[in-house]
Image 1 (cartoon, rainbow, N blue to C red):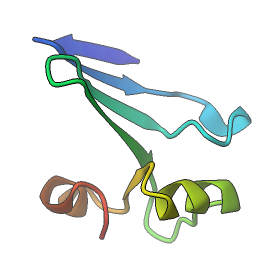
Image 2: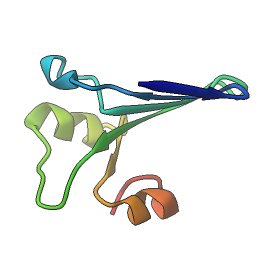
Image 3: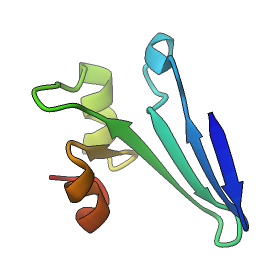
Image 4: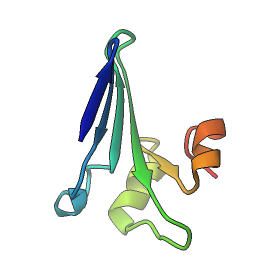
Amino acid sequence: MQAHTGGKWQVHLGAPEKNPIMPDLLLIDSERGRCLEVELKVKGGRLSPDQNAMVFRGEWAVAWTLGAFQTKGGEG
């Protein structure tokens, strides 16, 4: 699923598990040339080793809760 508003894109990948370096959500701001890759996790969820490596390297943010994502950009 994707949505576009004024140069900003939101892309939710429905089944990224076949590609370990694709997160669940891409937030793209084409006007500023920025992209935020976010892995969505539910309470009690765990990162796979590949996902953990992407977060550790600073490539992805993790959204453990909606509130943490809104206030800190994902970490929480």
